[in-house]
Length: 275
Image 1 (tube, one colour):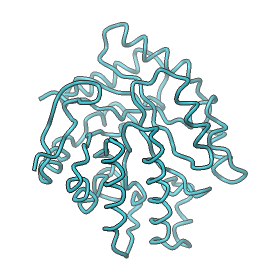
Image 2 (image 1 turned 30 degrees about the vertical axis):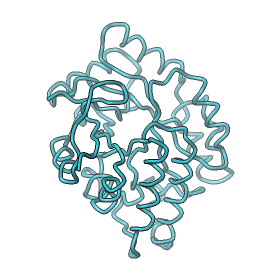
Image 3 (image 1 turned 135 degrees about the horizontal axis):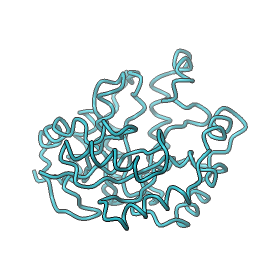
């Protein structure tokens, strides 16, 4: 079976055809027929103001914004013109206070799709290794609630085609002690209403969390509300393209999902609930 991997980052190498070929070659070994590149929005100088903050978030993202989005678009479009099976995407953070500007930014460029993600709770970059010690002084359950409040707002904004790594808040292994069922149900219900994909992201297996995003409990609610899901690797290097897709397929099928269709919005690694 052939698959698509729509969550792949070029940022650790140059924007060249040679670098793109590396991802294609590695993906082919795992049956990946098409790659969607989804650079982080914070990497681009044109998006610098969308992460503004007088605190750590603004400082960190300003330092990260070193790439020109026009060069990114140009190289992916060039690869398309050469017959490479690739898509132009972006992974865009949802920053509540910057929603209007983010919406405008996304409309400016010819993205084939947009992944929505949450990496910031105010100035707390909860998945940033530089802020790992902050977890020692925060209330984990309260932090989870804040994260999912922002996630719900991202879903309801209607700006995104798919929500990436929906419970990435667990990345370093911190788990809420309280029952998250009500929150997960709210998320699943909202995603179904908005027609947004939930990503099944295999990168969690490579992180301290030790499991895919989403968790089994969250997946139960996606299945209950028949939220379509899409399997992606979140590869930041060529050798991770399509990684652990076999485990992800078993995971989604366990909850009653089956593969359906082949198109931009219905790639072969898109699964719909059939129970």
